[in-house]
Image 1 (cartoon, rainbow, N blue to C red):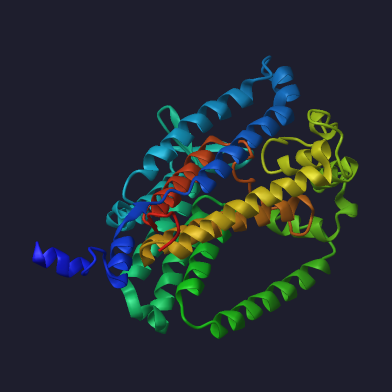
Image 2 (tube, helix red, strand yellow; image 1 turned 45 degrees about the vertical axis):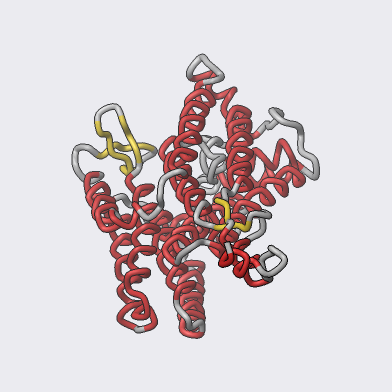
Length: 403
């Protein structure tokens, strides 16, 4: 009894340091409901725009205007529940399978070149395993995020050395080459390598070498584009053709640049407030497959500049929540996982919108959570589940403020 009184002070109260220590120990588990809410909002908005973009086409071709909406809606609901369940698991479990996941992604991309490969839209980028068909390149995006986080964490201080940096870029480059040559998907290959490069940039203590490399790459791209712009004929290679179309869109507006030009018409005709939800004209026939990578043009036409700006703000808020989680994660591994997810979402949004407004050549990159695609939503929700799991590692005081 005397000891207790001594610890708590003569008046029976704890001293200042003791109260502070007890307050710090009384922590509660955090869960980023802000991120969860924005995921639900973007997914719901995506389903609304998907129905608006596909109802006419689905009714004419399939005889049911709910065809695309029904498939995507069912997958989205299942994947949302799956993401919430995944968020309850310890994200450190991924560290144990990082190498296995990296190797599996390479094998799956190789399977595209076998009879399991499925051709769609003049490209073989899918594989079919029984009733399930998916794009292995989506697995590769997740694999490179998990592998980079695990590898950099295990390297520790060695990441400061040239050997460490080159190792990270080397593994990313292997994924880049596999995605490019096995699945013939340059845009996804660029996303994969960008995830590796930017993750290394964040983890590395020095900035100047990266800025010099970036300046060099920009100069090389500028020289390449200048050379292509002086070509007299349209290249037979579809990638060079896309660059030519981008540089001289008016010249090819009725052929290879038709989709891009019609998308710009849709954006321009939307004005400030748009024509109204469901009232797009371009989706009826002018923009083929409007539900895929060109769905942002339908948003602009129907909801105008205001609606497009709100969509960008929603993505900005999602990225803000991901950055918040990365900055406050309990350890480096969790932080790097969320940084990789942040980079993936950011670069994919930038590439998609850059294409539809003709700032960059056509890449075929979809808009996350909004474009049609079951494989995409499955792996996006997997990433969101991982990010939410990392958020649970954040510790709060009992009053609800960050430690």
